[in-house]
Amino acid sequence: MYLISVYFDSAATRKVQTLIEQIADASGNLYMTEKQVPPHMTLSAIEARSADVLIPAVKQLEGRLRRGTVSFVTIGQLFPYVLYTMPVLNQYLQEMALQVNHAISDIPDTTISRFYQHHSWLPHVTLGKTLSKEQMRTAFAVVQDKFSVFEAQVTELGLAKVNPHEDVLRFQLL
Image (cartoon, rainbow, N blue to C red; front, side, top):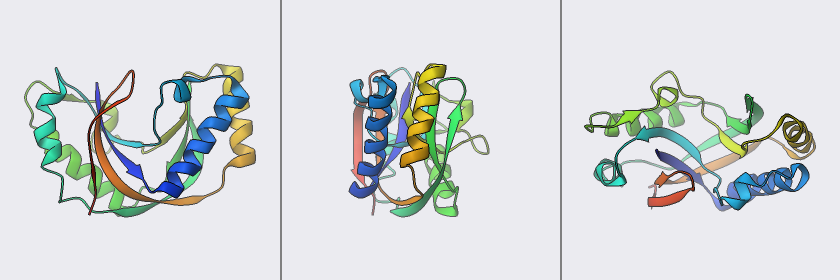
């Protein structure tokens, strides 16, 4: 599995990373910190035999995608194990996701996850993963105390391999 994701300005990245670390410390669930998963928002998840088939399509996006602002306004859960923060799905974010999926949709022998296709995407930034029920309660208590609405500048796009997270390609947006 490969992910095409966006990354954020340093202030937003620090804010999200701090939440990830506070959740890990309070809950004892170290998945995000031990795996060194950087704060990111996945635009597309793709099954492919190797990154090599995806790299040309992702590279063609370089110089075409622009920076933009997203507002993170809420916390949510993907039951039973994931806690996340979610932005408002604005026109900028929707168009970027469409451009990314259009760029990779015709690559032979690849499949875009059904959860990342047009009209099936829930934009989010994972704060905690593989949380037990008790860890989820603890993590939620952390975000109740520490989360506040914030804006993030989308500054980079990248292609990464998962489990463990490993950047394959990453570039600055215009």
